[in-house]
Length: 100
Image: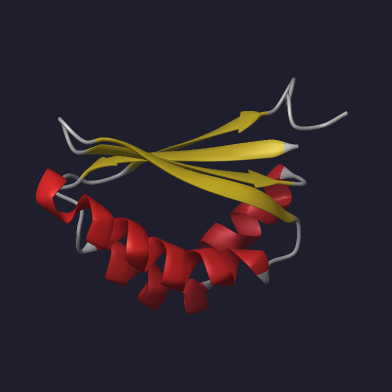
């Protein structure tokens, strides 16, 4: 399994709006993608830092989603909330407590 982690800052007064946009636009798109397992969006309400973690069957599945030009418009609607450019890193998942 593979995890992609995106970190950015959002004006803390807009966190809930950003979360609603991500939940209604990006998450449904992810759910239609090959290899998608689950995702979370967490935030530090004081600093406005958000962390979005998506889990995929493989790095190839994650990269296929991130390269797909059809997702650009969806992503742009969420990134308009970002006060800083997002950083994105990928990791192999070695242990996942939600699995048996």
